[in-house]
Length: 238
Image (cartoon, rainbow, N blue to C red; front, side):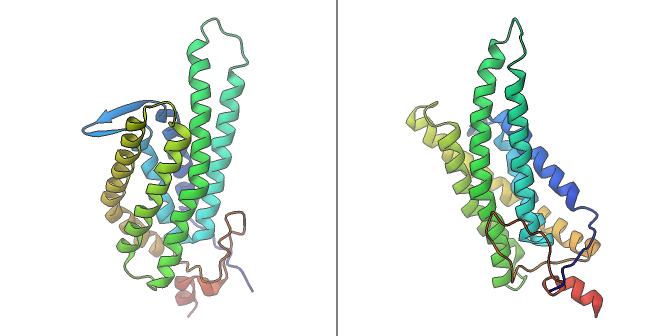
């Protein structure tokens, strides 16, 4: 079966923004803060955008490209964590603050990797599967449902690895629930934007992938599609 070899204008920009949001949020996550009534890690306010970009990439370019984005994010998160660890090997007279920060950052990165593999992959899976189930309709409903489920699992996994034992049990539960609620509300507010961007990108890129024959194994690395899986490609051909 022939695979489409289209060159997209904005796919790699979206992937880069996803990686940026993931790494920067990890750097900020070690600081627990309160904004209005939300008690959460500071990185949460940035990490929300990683789901925003995954939703758009999966909706427009397909689950395979969403999965590719996730693995690229994991690679650069791991690389950043490794380089951060290497910096501790250089002698410095006032290195105590870095010696405290780096192990915390490493723990946050480990929790991010687990979160990305489990929750963000689930989010992309739900977006792709619901798109087929609704035959491309009800994009807002699809985004809301996938976000509701995946963000809860995301915050549970992230909080368990990143913060359990660092906070009292009551504080840990409060942090997890308020972080999830904030992330869901924020994603809900961003859905009109993600819908508008998705629709515009489909027009610009002339692509609209349906994952009818996709292998959804997270460890599969194929990122190409046949022309029959691209609805707009078929319309252009006709």
